[in-house]
Amino acid sequence: MSEGRRKIAARIQHGLWLIFFAQIVVRFFVELPYNYWVSWLPALGAIAISMVTARSARMRIENRPPAPVEVAPPVTGRWTALNSPADKVPSHGTHNLAQTYAIDIVAEPAEGPERPAPVWFWPLAHRNRDYPAFGAPLRAVADATVAHAEDGQRDHLSRSSLAGVLYFWIVEGICRTLGGSRRIVGNHVVLDLGEGTYALYAHVQRGSLQVRAGDKAIAGQVLGRCGNSGNSTQPHVHFQLMSGPDLDTARGLPFRWRGVGVPAAGEAFTVDEDEKGDERENQTATTSAPEPSRRA
Image (cartoon, rainbow, N blue to C red):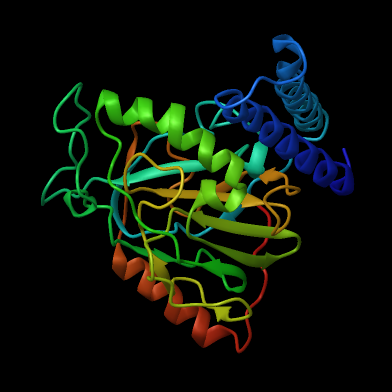
């Protein structure tokens, strides 16, 4: 499916979901002038579009599997992977928003406080500062140009209890889907790595970005900090590579972190800050202008 068709499909799908949920709201106040089953047609149409686009993405991967792009890790310290393309593709259960090879990671410091474990009932939520990932620096994975950056959305409380998760899926998830891609990824920054490769950092902390669109970034440079904005149950880093800056039309690309690889779900990994600093110094000493990353 071409980029233009993916864009049209995304807009139609979004419009159908808006119509479907608008009917639900209207039914609370007035009787709609058609049978109840007719109101489900927009939802069925949106699901059909999703199935077609997913099939197209699956066939493309099977027929022309893309080569992984090697980049530096986006963080330092000790982290653990959650949803990972090392375990399944698509890693998040969908190809939408170029998430085919996306990964989620949470901070697991060797020394220091552990992140709160999920509970059934109480407490309903945790404060963001209870999680060691919150406020952790996010670093450029390669020399790049900032294609997009925004950090005005709030960081909400965790969704760490059964009630919180139900609210996340039934209420918040639906509202964010209707709000479009930027409400799902929350505060985010997109880097243009060159050669048609872009890196997305999602759920960034509000007001933490140190770069803006058009800025040049050097590998290892701090871009902002890990937050809990958008469609997120706890402070974590969502990272992915994609073929363009537009989430609605881009395709997901596989990555490989230099010195780490692709950690599987539950696998811990450590990136020393000294290594990132050495890499940044080497980049500065050997080049006067950013160069695009190379495919592995």
